[in-house]
Image (tube, helix red, strand yellow):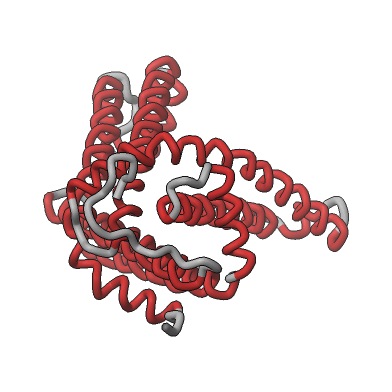
Length: 302
């Protein structure tokens, strides 16, 4: 059997995406619940600040950036509580996403569409394993400051010690681009390691991470092409939202609905990316995984 190209894998992912409506809906509902929670926290603090504000009414109301600056300066204690609450909220959101990631990966690996029984069993089965995998991946974050220091060293060799004055904001943009790029690469490496673990549940977190790194090294053009295509789709989706946003009013139900449609599109791309990566792993790995059949044994997740 011929190995599919990246284009063929992407096309198959979008042709099969309608079979994962429940999965996309769960991801969307998780995002919606988190957004409502964090927005409510902001609203409570901003409303309590309304009576003490010395700023006239501005477009955007209390959510305007001027009110945020005033709040941080005048009510540091209240803003500190809000910051802690938001950090906790995002941490819980990340944990929930990691919990659902096991179900998404297992369903995509089986390639049989939505299966609630497999989904929830996989969520509980892989969640502690994914946490251990995250702990193995965390030390790789040290590559970010090392890369930034290396970039500053290269700029110093080219432009001298005062390269900040010569380049201005360009130097800042280069460092920001480097940091964002490395974060996205590590995020993608973590996603591939999760899929490696789902393909072979007997693997430990370190083994899955090493397998993901080796696959990226061996199939670098394939992974790079896949990431480029999906990055382009994410950018086009964001650009569409920005262009539509300019035509909508500042407030109102239409703006909220359009934003939810955009989030739904993003979650659809997330599932399509997982399906594409799983397909590439299945067909381009050194030892293809044979899909199990029949009823799942007691000690097997599927």
